[in-house]
Every structure is written in structure tokens, then in C-alpha cells.
Length: 220
Image 1: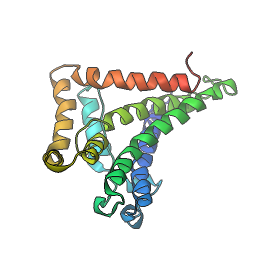
Image 2: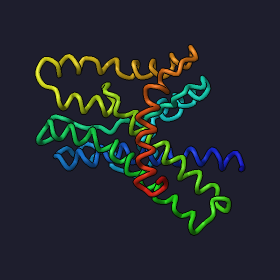
Image 3: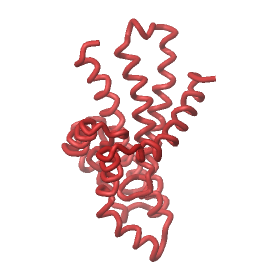
Image 4: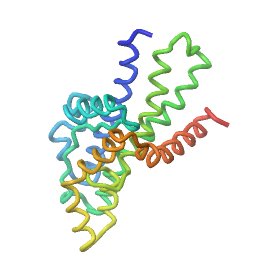
């Protein structure tokens, strides 16, 4: 396959996954009373509104260069004023889960569309099926990765929504170090030729992928 077409079959699923992931956070926040994202134009399918220069481009390229077992990237976070959510704890929980839910829905949609092979042979439209296969994998990886219970990831927001009192305040103080912890978790094992990230995230990712394949009729 033409190298440009092959690259595009990675880029399009990634852009679609992160764009809809972030837009879904804004959409859910609006349902619970915060229209900050809507007023800033972030509830949008336009990927240019969500792409982060470092998180979407530089960091994934750097991890690929290091041959990291897990390639991580992120989009520009959608602004959410958590103090405007009503009820606040349920609102925070639902906003956090919206992005991961979107990734799971995209993975399911990709799995269902793989049945196009009954109409079009994969050999006749390899580019289309590469997009679908990669979309399935990318969205499973993003769903699992984002549920790591570290702020500011979605999993961390879920934990934060469930905590109260002193534990909540202590947990919240870790947010300033969250991205550094995540990057260290991905980069340090790659530098020292360790498969820590693969072993930690690989099992739940393959579990999710296997069940989506079963649900969409691609596995008995």
C-alpha cells in the first residue's frame, strides 16, 4: 500500500477517536448545566479545535521513536466548570465517563462495520478495512488508558467524584503531577526495555477487544 495511504489509515481513526472523546465531555457537561465548552466552540466534530500540539503530535511521535510498547496521546482538554454541574458529584462522574463511553461506542461501530466484508472484499478496499481494524484497536486502547485512576485522566475524575472529605483533597493534590506520572509510566519502561506498560494495560485492553469482537459477531 502507498505509504501515505497507510499513514492516513492511522491518522484518521486517531483523530476521530480523540475528537469525539473530547466533544462528548463537553456535550455531557452541558446536560448537567455547564455550557462552558459549548460557548467556547469545543462541542464540535472539527478536529482542529481539539488537537494539542504536544499531546496529539509530538508525544506520540516521541513514543514511536522510542519504540514504546504503549503509544499515548491526548487532545486539548475540553473546559468544564465542575462547580456549575448539578448535581455536582453525579455530573463529574458522568462527564468523566462520557469520553470512555464514546471510545467504546466507536469500537463497537467499527466492529459492526467490519461485516462490510460480506459486500466488499477486504482485498478490494484494503484502506477502508485498515481504518476499521485500527479504529477498533485504537478506541479500545484509549478507553482502557483513560480509565487509569490518575488525575487528570478520566479514571482519576471518576475516583475524584466518588471521594469526599480529606481523601478527596489529598487525591486532588496529585493532579499537578498526573501527566508526569503517566509519561514516566510510558517512557521509562521503553528506555529500559521493560514491558511494564504492556503487561499492565495489555490485559484489560485485550479483554475489552475480545468482548467487542464477540458482541459484534466477529468471534464465536
